[in-house]
Length: 112
Length: 228
Image (cartoon, rainbow over all chains, first blue to last red; front, side, top):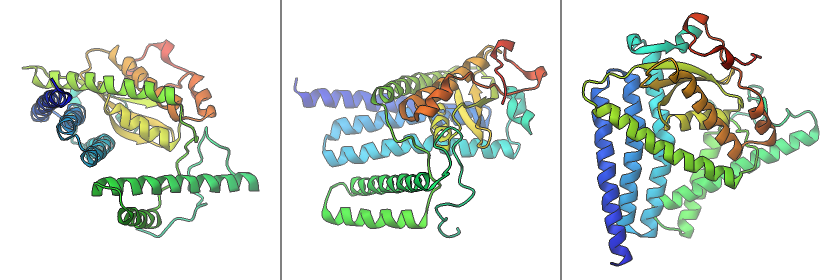
């Protein structure tokens, strides 16, 4: 089996795993009861899902310019997803759209 | 959007644990050199991104990237970061390795909670006081903990170095100090990788805990360090 075939199979596995994680993230966003919980789903499995999809694409394409672009997408995905989630979470919290009954402790409320 | 900030505007944050504020001509000129080094790094990064976006390296792309990068630096100046100026490769590897494993376990955890039928996770918002209060450390720690198990950043108190963190899937009071420790451990790994020697020393001091009202305080008494 040539190195190209191995890379193709690895890429396929990465694509399937990334797709499944993105699906789980989507289910989480749909099912979680609250904005803050939903943001958890929108950051962790979503980011890893995208990273795995990118790895799969990179393993399939295998050209320098494509890999450069893919690395760039990955870096910006890692840098921006937490910021976006934080902006949404903070906006939801400050406008009182967080379900307090789901929280055991809220030290942010105690500060204000 | 107002114009460019002067390099020595008085509201520039002084790092509590970083270099001393310029108390002499030597320190001031060194600060200026550091600012120029930071700007050049940013410019080099933007030229690199520009070339990656176009997909190939050419003189035209280099020139275009240079022009765009200069325009970004002139029209969107950023407050200075307090980078110690030193990367530790070994600590950086530890940080990256732990980050990847934690990202994987966090994703699996959240995915499992998401697809578990009939399970309603409990949450909590806890305040964590970081030991190194520079902007760079606050930002990097906040980014990193949003991608590791259980935690998500909600709000930041920049003056006091406090991160307000939402914890997903809280099962009992013991989970909260555990998550606090996890945030502090992430901070420690980041500082070990990129922090200055002064910041490294700050890590060894016991973490000052957030004074919370006793009624809702989930921490055991031993967890409470001295407050500043």
